[in-house]
Length: 299
Image (tube, rainbow, N blue to C red):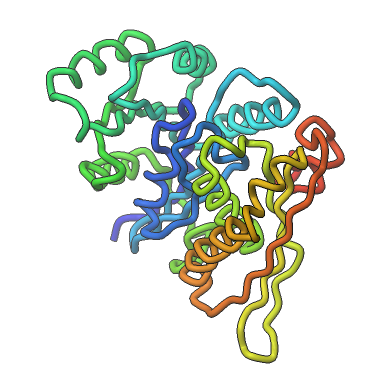
């Protein structure tokens, strides 16, 4: 019988290349927030993929970008620190976009890294195969990639191949998590992320990333529903008005959509109460960052 393998895989890349989509595809359910806005993922989210022979723990890093404020610094530090703790690094790029300063910034940070690096080219269903060869040549001259795997995270093309290749690079090791566990994040965190996703999805350009969600409580009520109380935090009163909407309609819509996803995740009926609070310039104040869950010592 072959020995059991286990290890950690970091997914790194420019914002919006599909890292969270891949993670959700691999674990088979939604644990990472998905949005077409950049910098959606703020903390490292671990997805756990288990087979009888192996366990892979995926770390989805915040999109690396040039920081504009203290929250940005935290996100970039968080992503780079991950690279020292893993067995394989996936550099993910978008087949539809030309290599840009963001990709070059990440490649520069990977220079000299002794960890095996895979180049994963996502969204191949959107480009002509000839274009793919150009992309491969373009990146291959910059780093000594162990493997180059073109995929479509949305369609699932070649994801199985990627998993099989990753397996070859994992060391022998124990199963760290139970086989039915797909993430190591507490439920509070995932619930807050699902609510934040709906805020971004429904308000589009009007609400930027100056939004945080804090789950104040989760408990079972007398009707056997899980009562979730959460506060959406914004930086300006005008943003609060947008999130509440005319006659409270927007907040109600956010609640309905978030509740559906939370019920699927918890496998339980929930009652969701949402509030909106203005906290001026919270992204630049360390005590607020800590209160809202962005603590370096947590990860």
